[in-house]
Image 1 (spheres, helix red, strand yellow):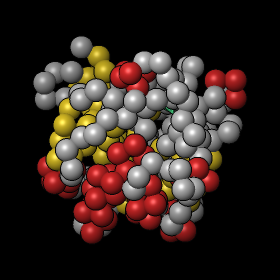
Image 2 (cartoon, helix red, strand yellow; image 1 turned 135 degrees about the vertical axis):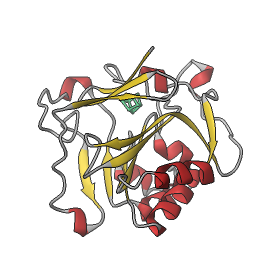
Image 3 (cartoon, rainbow, N blue to C red; image 1 turned 180 degrees about the horizontal axis):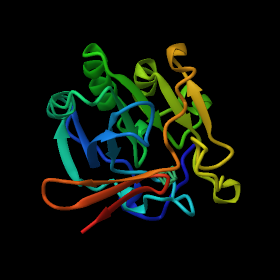
Image 4 (cartoon, protein in one colour; image 1 turned 45 degrees about the vertical axis):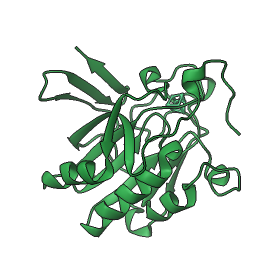
Length: 207
Ligand code: SF4
């Protein structure tokens, strides 16, 4: 199902139980889903899509290990976060830990959305990554399908980046909330002084 890469860093690795290997995390994003939300970019994606906005997220090597409990606490500490979005990298290669994080956040009243390079059909098949069904059960919204450069939508008003991708509203309560400001970018300045630029152009870390 996955594109086989000759680069060994692009093969999923085992990480400690109840931990996530993430590329980055921000609070209070308004360009990655409905309302104001935290965004978690996981580390690792084997697809090597030409034109990918986040090639830094491809390697599965450990970047930042964080426990599910710590990440849940961090997200819930900020009362402006009304939801969380999982992006990447490929969230479904870390599905068990993300499902656990999602359960904790949903119990606290947050909604949960995820991007994936898989199609929904692949995620519902027997060859899906472990834990895919458990993560799907927690999602309010799924945006599925890989980025295909030849099908790229060069419109800042589109919630998807290429026309093969689909917005799956898994919780009908969100049917009329696919309206986030995807034509905007945000610059988040982190405590260590580094900056994350996110939104229409995806994810960029700047020194
Ligand atoms: S699936 Fe997404 S993160 Fe992975 S290579 Fe493609 S565009 Fe990049």
